[in-house]
Amino acid sequence: MKLSNAARGRLTIVASFAAALLLAIVPGPDWAEPFRPEWVGLVLIYWCMATPQRVGVGVGWSVGLMLDVLYGSLLGQHALAKAAIAYLTVRFHTQLRMFPRWQQAASVLVLVAINHLLVLWAKALASEAPVGWSYWTPSIVSMLVWPWLFVILRDIRRRAKLA
Image (tube, rainbow, N blue to C red; front, side):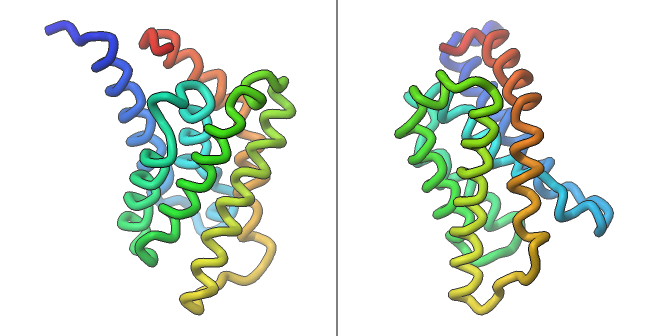
């Protein structure tokens, strides 16, 4: 059975989000937890930037809700944050696509920091605010991972013949 281009594109996007969700919940050593990139946010930023007509605020909200369920956190805190970064990425996708990779990485740092700030705000409202600078290290690690993840996802998008 041969898939149509549209079905292949949807499957590719869904598979990349499934991989990102898996990477987000796979347990690691306690010392490495602060250095875990924001995988779901990075994949969301990529697809919103590359195919804003397919991936946008609704997808951001949906994967954020999935994260809330997987983490067992307050329902809606990750959904709000992911919807916000999806909106910002779709809004500025033409500018982001024109940036050199290092400027894209700096933009990713800002977007992921906004994501963490919104989650922190929701946790503070629920009296669960984390303490310490280690809360912000995933933003920096995500910025460092971005150039490689961008190249990998771009290659996957081209192989799937997604516009």
